[in-house]
Image 1 (cartoon, each protein chain N blue to C red):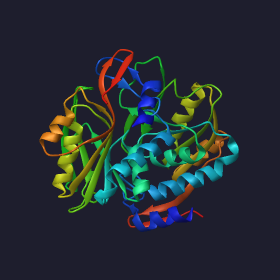
Image 2 (cartoon, chains in turn orange, brown; image 1 turned 135 degrees about the vertical axis):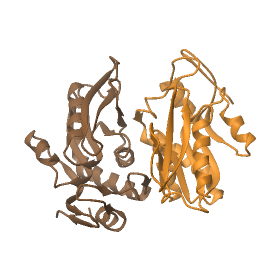
Image 3 (cartoon, chains in turn orange, red; image 1 turned 120 degrees about the horizontal axis):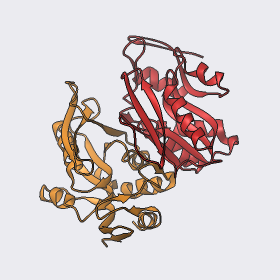
Length: 190
Length: 190
């Protein structure tokens, strides 16, 4: 997506070979007009999938997911993160290891907000190795809902996320794909 | 705000005299159309204030703040929460005690995203005793930006937040004011 690549080029910062900082418009400060453009683009991409619900993970997935939900006229559910296991029967939960922060955490979602038979679009701000995405898909499966699409704002294509998901039969739509990062330099995969 | 009170009456749950659960449309599942209505209402309320930037706190303030930012055509910054102190010179930080969770936490904001002289609207999903709001105002003051408005989606008016803020010279606009909660019963302050 051209507009997003322009934002990343102009406002993003490659801090290392692994870390792309987009705090200026997505992860700390949010550009609402860009978020609406991302939401419209996701909507266009998945408009034939009869989506019932969008699921994202707190925190930075919320803005693009909300705009997509507004245009699609469907609710948005944000899955919550916790560093402790949740002892609640009314939640689905799944474990994730964050390589960025080197911590394990639990993601959880109330059984009230993802239901059997619902057609779900998963949206998130970043995909790296795909583990947070897989943990979310696990929750959707526990609920016996169906994953009708995976929409990612920024894919770090040099990490293994897409392959893991494709090997499981999913397709992934990313709005921007990063081929490589070097301190001060960002290369897109076209 | 009539529409919000209808949502709270229909989908909210008073779990005790202190806890109002609105996970169905604000704190876990989000209703995007309602969020747009809340954003428009905040915009209408603060349209004469020449707002440069909206500041909110993660996580549930993001959705109404984003919609307001979209309509006002200004950026939205979400302040981050952490249970540990942040050791970064490039952040403003402030301490908050959460009575709900009985923990202390730090909120922090990059110095890049709140600047001297900016006219800030603070938006948050809930106000109870006002401590999270005061901690945010503290960050805005550290930055030498000005607080031009405080917009709250749901005010628990039976707690002391409004008085603390008014005693400091601020005015607070709340879209719904809860006079009292009892298990199973929600009374609005008109």
